[in-house]
Length: 120
Image (cartoon, rainbow, N blue to C red; front, side, top):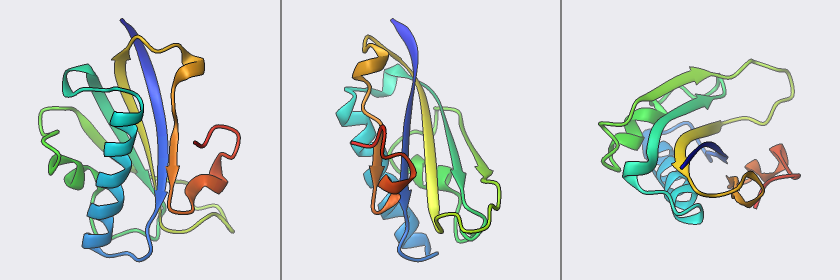
């Protein structure tokens, strides 16, 4: 199996813990199912969020999907003027048989505008 990176992003409607949980769980579940990733395939997951999101760590939300034994890390995106607000980005590192051209990068809830070239 090869090591691959799977990208995704979602935009929250508000900076609220419940919204963070719903948006991040939806995104991760979609990324896993769209790329046939199982728990055993996962190496690590990196989350970034825009500086306006302060309600919760995206990684804490991921633990609700039984990912507590997967290395998870959060960081803050660069505060670029005019950037799309309330965005959580995800990069999953995993073992996969998929060729790079076959990877489905998932952008949801308005975040599709970030990468129209690869968003599904």
